[in-house]
Image 1: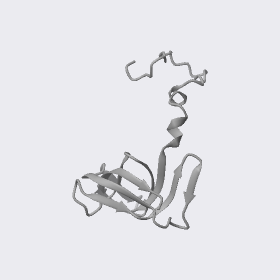
Image 2: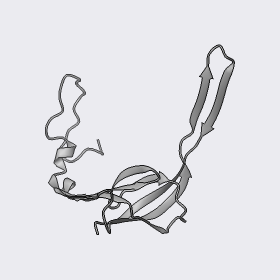
Image 3: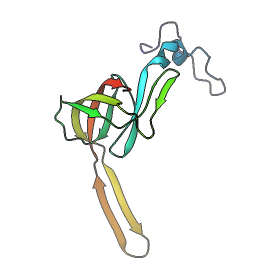
Image 4: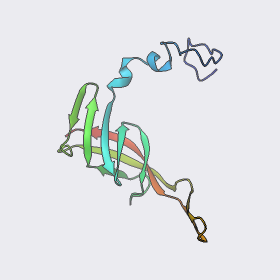
Length: 139
């Protein structure tokens, strides 16, 4: 009950009942959608980032506590004002601070062919860098 917003009561679960319109997401108000966000590309993937957000990207060569700059910014938006690059924004950059490095969860890789005496088993743990976004600029 402590994690509910003030004024909301916990009701018993009824699978045939839709949630009321006044749920936690609507109680946050319109300011929730006015935050500045960007879409960056790093490590062959694209990420949607917001200021003070923490995300895990592929391993970067940077020490924890240092600042990294993502110059490959594909899109910057704030509310209804959206700037899209072709393919990247000129002068757009996202600054982030490296929080830590680590390894992801173990993934088992199994190759198997029946009736052929063929079985190959391997495990893999992907290296990652956890970064905290400090600044977004559209250029």
